Image (cartoon, rainbow, N blue to C red; front, side):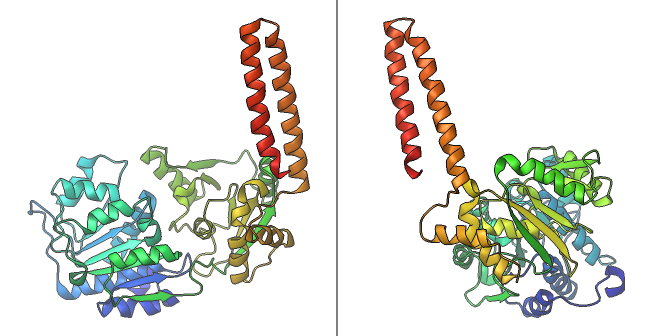
Length: 418
């Protein structure tokens, strides 16, 4: 398998996870982005299936895969499927991928041709199970990739529906594996519902730590200056604005999303503009730079985003634009992530983190000045409009007085922190 797949040496997460999975134990594994987690669970599962035999047949009315792998996005689950197809080359094991955005009939036809390893997004998986085209009685392995995302509010209900399905083997009759680069404490507690009590927790590096091969830069950039700063960075990297670029976001048609990724992978488009749909799991060669134009709401999402570069030991760079007025809540966790990765922490970021830690939101003098100017301008315009309306008569005068009163209350409340 080594010469064909290009695998010559195990990564740390593979070194420790593969023996645990081969021994039959449940596992929660936390390792940096780009550390080879997909192979860490696919290789031992395929080895077990080769040893124990498989039962899939295109003649069955209902397919009963031995392994189900669930991931949050279509792009990631398709990538896992392609890896599975590579590892089972030359065997009788048949992997299948199903996800939303495609016709349900197409997914059913793929499954009914025989299915041993089913790679699926949660919604489409539950749909096909509900149509009784997939049975769970024969399932031996349940894998949750990006497990913290699979157990949070976004997919948590779907996952509970899955494990509570009447045909789902109980957790002591199946092997459950969870992999991610981040595992918040609340997610670790939720995982107990899925894993056997004697599960093992493998951590490579710091829990939730960023990849040490990514050089991180945090720039203090207010919202209105972000576009100019982005153009400056792109021009410095000799990526001119007339170059081709593509878009990847949840609202695009699935075909458009696939074309965008294909063009980016091939180098036809040197720049891809994406939402958080591209934050997790995607492994694309030669991604040298990640720019967080807007920071995410959680530090876990930040760690995953910058992990699109610096993969498998290759160096990468990540830049994020930090706006004091909207990103202050991330200052303290950003300082920790930078420190854990032995990166330089800007003094201004430490100051903001200190202020938030003390329970006081940080507002710079410039922000105060701009906010006060905006408040005075809006108040002046409101009063001017109201005075103009007042001339029209008594009814208008009453409305105008109420309008002025409301604006003053709102503005003075927001000016309390000045």
